[in-house]
Length: 240
Image (cartoon, rainbow, N blue to C red; front, side, top):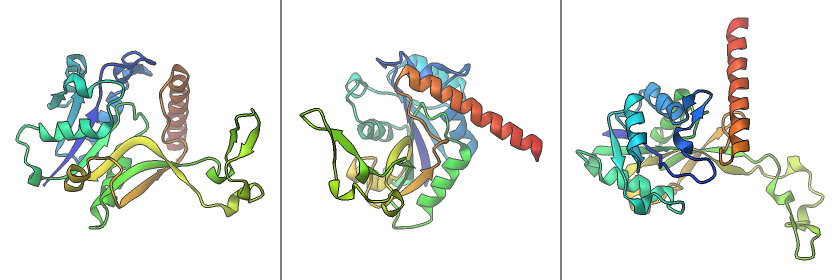
């Protein structure tokens, strides 16, 4: 049974042109998740799903031998991830649904994902017959139940006023999608056709292991965070 990884990477990006192959600290950003996936040694096949021969050529230079050119209908700003993953799975060479046990969708800008994280998440989905999916999440910095909004009159008001005086430590923690990866049982994914499968387990990252990169400011912050974390790792190695 095969465990496959799919990296969806289209060439178009309006806010950050060619974001998926833009240099991140001197290296194309897509190289980070590709390297992590290769070094994890858990995937039988790693596929880049793209609408660009430029991205496909880069993926091959980075060590991949499989890519899937997707149609324009699956390459615009409004295309969800799940149809792209399904297209790649169903168009794999030598595709056999019964021969694929799990699918991992890894986003091309996941610079903080590591081989260790991927292996740990894979072990989670593999260790229980009830687990259909495992994907990365971050704990919300502040309790959602203490959230506020600006009302039509322009004033702040509590969304849940009954929790205005609740202590944060007394409120249940909540989580958000970290946007790094989704490990999914192949059969369940092809049936439900979504990345948030039923019976999904969380892989909880700390706040230094993920950062959304949607704007130029996000990019700058991510580079600073990445360099800081690498410096900490290097310092720790020296001290030990």
